[in-house]
Amino acid sequence: MRTLIDVVTDAKARGVAVGHFNISDSEGFKAVTEVAKELGLPVIIGVSEGERDFIGLDEVVAMVKAEKDLGHEVYLNADHTYSVEKAKLAIDRGVDSVIIDAADKTFEDNVRMTKEIVDYARSTRPEVLVEAELGFIGKSSNLLENVPEGVSEETQTKPEEAQQFVLATGIHMLAPSVGNVHGIVKSGEPKLNIERIQAIANTVNIPLVLHGGSGNKPEEFLAAIRAGVSIIHINTELRVAYKEGIKEGINIDEVAPYKFMAEGVKQMKAVVKEKLELFNSK
Image (cartoon, rainbow, N blue to C red; front, side):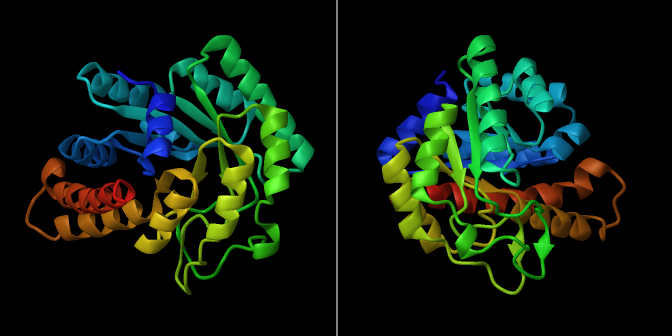
């Protein structure tokens, strides 16, 4: 079984991207992993602090381990972790990667928190990848009326800052601000800054991660991958599909949860299939 760094390094070399999909329950897990297995592609399951509080960190670790034991390339990321303590806990419990998110703090505080987690991972579980964010892209994975306050072209990640940050922290992967935002903006999703992605990729020479992928156009994803993005996060689109599917499911004369929830799983699977096929095309 390949490690996550093997998978990401291979994707980077081949000019494709690994799909990262957030889930908060077993239905979401089922939707993501079944499609990945059908397509024969590796996939990353993401659980933010709130999501892993809901599903249970130990529970989702066990679910991922069960898939790995069957030979499936399913990996677990502790997404958007805002404290050093919770990041260390996730590492201890068995995740494959962790994101320490201090993007809304000062550059110095972001470096300090990130380096502490990098050092901790190396001393306890060296195979764990540590990712950090540099540049603010909002925090809400919801449907938004407008671009979040504080997200603008002026606040996008600068290549020289990215290089300084990577050298100071020793992170394995970087999530920059490059026109992306968390959530889906109803008034229109901002365009990705492909030139900025390319400039950062050329400067830091580590895999880049695109957060807030929900709502962006297929051609933007492909351009971002060509420019240096190796992992793409999808969350809000899955949530919307899940909700719409459940609404359809409960309109039928059925009380068995596994039957009326099945429509939610079906609609999530359609999103996952579309994205995985796109991210792995050239």
